[in-house]
Image (cartoon, rainbow, N blue to C red; front, side, top):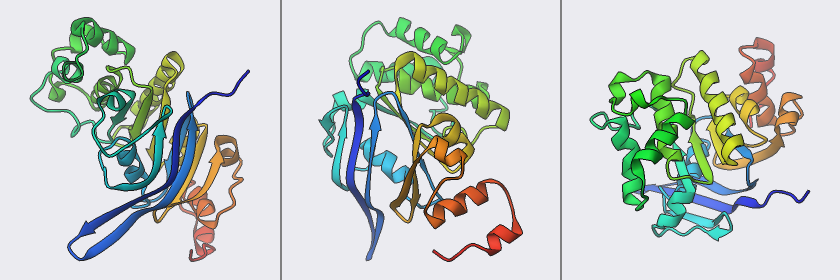
Length: 263
């Protein structure tokens, strides 16, 4: 069987932010590849550059340097409606990412209207079923939904254009643990049913290990190591920072923390 084609190819990605006289290099030359139908994780502490990578891929931050190609096409800083249909993003906060005065129907219909997609009513109802929400949710407002239901609507909004790549920015961190599991299982089902490619940002190694085939460990705007989920589960990481993350993910351990080296 031939290997899956390449969906995402990132080479030497750099992103700088300028505030007054200050110049901050948020990404310092990140490179990675993701095959079609796979899940790729980006993990690291806050400020390591994980979300900055996603925002560059989603063209929400056009001020990047390097090379990005998605589904065989180079990404440019100019708006590209076709690319926006290929790539969609699910944001961290299900409370803040949905317009409070728009019904679920309007939230899901607007992307279809913007991109000139027909048969809106059937597409909206079908997409709600795919995220396991019935038709009774169609005309509800976000404040009438639970946190898990809101995140399902956010996933539906990303799915409604039938993308190939979903960018997931901490999609379960604002949810209760039991609801996190439901959303992760839903994402796994959707990936299997629709051959989706995921790039998942998370600070939770358990979440990444459950959903992702491979992951990049980031620190200070750089990828320090790329490992697969089996290596992560077995603790077979080589970079000192990666080992620190593994220890931290298992809870407080005074002896282990005392042994940490300054990196």
